[in-house]
Each structure stands twice: as structure tokens, then as C-alpha cells.
Image (cartoon, rainbow, N blue to C red; front, top):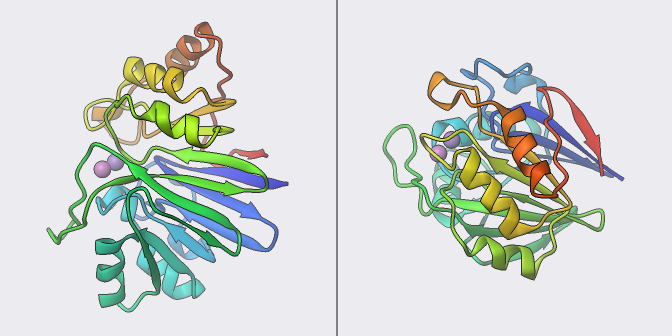
Length: 225
Ligand code: NI
Ligand code: MN
């Protein structure tokens, strides 16, 4: 059995067996985060794109934990230049790691680093572990090929951005759920900043009205899968 914990914004901790995996660990400078980067130990750090609210504390966490960063080729080159270990993937490609499989999926967005360096193409990620598939959208607008992602890998848990302004808003994210057809949807990327202050309960009600299961997780809340 695995454990999924919401660290706020698009940041998640997954515990599976002896492995700890974090996704998009934006903690320092995040007004909603309840943990500091120095509280987080991770064997693997998965990064969807280079924007500061996703790349976040990847390098300090990787260095302090001896963990491996998994992201696109350009982001891993950048991390290597900063003295952190990484494994490069790219869109459409996946690899089996000791804890499970990681595959990068498309995302319609940008991916420059806070210092302006080139961060390659933004991605979403499909993780397969504990016999379950988890799809984290990264930051993205709606695209109909989400349907293909759900067809190729039936999704158990769909972590979907709903905050509008920079990504899909609520109504587009409801359509994304209809495309992906996950067993459970959990919203993310809302309320961290004023421009993404949308109501996750409104999203949850609209998803339920379409016949899909949805759960709003508070910061620090966990779910077993
Ligand atoms: Ni972004
Ligand atoms: Mn973002």
C-alpha cells in the first residue's frame, strides 16, 4: 500500500515501501506550505517543469537526501550543473525505477527557470507503483490528448490543476476529468496566490455531477492507495 500526501500547490509526497518520492516540491516561499525543504527527505524528486513554483527546492532536497531528480533532459542538465544527481527523460518516454515507472506526458505551458535559463518542454507525469497509476498534470491548459493518456494507462488517481490564469480553470479541468476517466480526482494548484484563488469545492461538485469520484485534500492530508 502506498501513501500520498498533499504538500500544497502542486507538491506531493508519495511513500511506497522504503521509497519516498516528491513531486514539484515548492516549499520555501510558498505561503501555503506547512513543511520546510529541510524537513523533506526524498529518494526521488520528480519535476514537471522549471518554473519556480514547481522546481522549487529540488536541488537542496536532492543534495541533502542524496536523492535523484527525474525530469526532462534540459532540467536535468541544469541540475547536474548545480551539483545534483538526475535522470533525464522526455515527453512520451518512461523508465522503470526501483519504486515504479515514471513517464512524461505533454503539457501546454512554459518551462523557463526563475533565472531565465532554458527548462525544455513542460510535462505532466504518469507514475505507476503499487499496482496503481497516478497522473499529475503539471501545469497545463486543456488538451484532448489527455484522453489518450487515460486510454494507454488507466488512471487511478488524477492530480489536476484547477487554478485558472496560468493553467486550466475549473470548467476546463472538469472536461479533463471526462477525458481521462480516472477512478479518483484530486484538485491542485489553487489558492496559493491571489490569481489562482478558485474554490476546490465548486470543482468537486461539478466533477461529482459528471459521475466521477473526487476528493479535496487539505495541506498535510494523506490518502492511502
Ligand atoms: Ni508553471
Ligand atoms: Mn505553476
